[in-house]
Length: 364
Ligand SMILES: NC(=O)c1ccc[n+]([C@@H]2O[C@H](COP(=O)([O-])OP(=O)(O)OC[C@H]3O[C@@H](n4cnc5c(N)ncnc54)[C@H](O)[C@@H]3O)[C@@H](O)[C@H]2O)c1
Image (tube, rainbow, N blue to C red; front, side, top):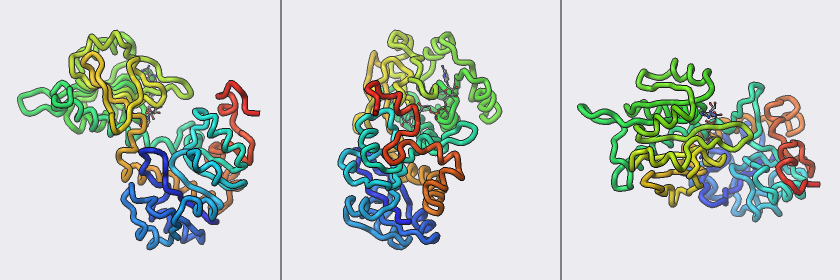
């Protein structure tokens, strides 16, 4: 099969869909891989690295789309790419169709086969192609939070680990899922006192078994949240209710109960956020202050660490890319139902109800 990897052109996106290692694997199986020149630059891979691995480098995005039977990407295609996508071409990437009617209509019109990373789902309901990005965001939440606790950037002026003779900082984590566990691990590693709240006792048991004793678990309730926000320095929002907006666990009125310079990191901002005062920010301007409380609400946290994020993402996407290339999309999606659940739009037909239901105007 001919596989094409265009350079990502969405603002602030530096990841790339295949590493030189991935190219090497595909070429070993007898596939031809076309990479757009400089596509890997933002993630630390040169054109030479790709050439050595067996890729053919192409100078333009148009050439990559024109050559490939399957396009592998990171982010959803942007309008500039819509006319380049061909009938029957397989496009394997994050799409998030329900959040863009224009993208959905463009992909229906293209008659391509659109397989979305975010809906590839294992038997147990887990989402293997979303997990690594939550892992990155969870770890980054503490790194960023620790930085914004510094006084010159309006934080409380607390060092998370403390020093001998001075108690450590206190971190409150709302949600003990993938983001929450990784955040707890990082915070505990720095020596902070960590409190993790969740409504799922299985998750709390897991944390309790796994983490050192300075990581304390409690059931998530309004009462407990109100109690803890008064004496924690860094608060991480990491809740998710699948398919729904994040619950508002910290209201605007509750900000006055926090100490000035407390830092809120709302990782759940991409689902609307779990603090009432959350609004999405960017890596260029990541924070804002309300009532002396620092808010960090970057919607694409992994974008700041493209080298790590590219490796983490391609570790999990490559096995699926190989299946699609070796078997063709129809057989691969039939033989591997987890991959099959990634099919969203097939040759002009929407095949998942969530997309049709997302748009009031209807799609037909
Ligand atoms: N900002 C970013 O760059 C970025 C990156 C990756 C993920 N995310 C987002 O982070 C959020 C968390 O993702 P995840 O992969 O950890 O999800 P997850 O499903 O693994 O974990 C969510 C946890 O929230 C818990 N929860 C639900 N309601 C709660 C409540 N009222 N109180 C406390 N806990 C509650 C659930 O029981 C679950 O354990 C999602 O919204 C995800 O989209 C954002």
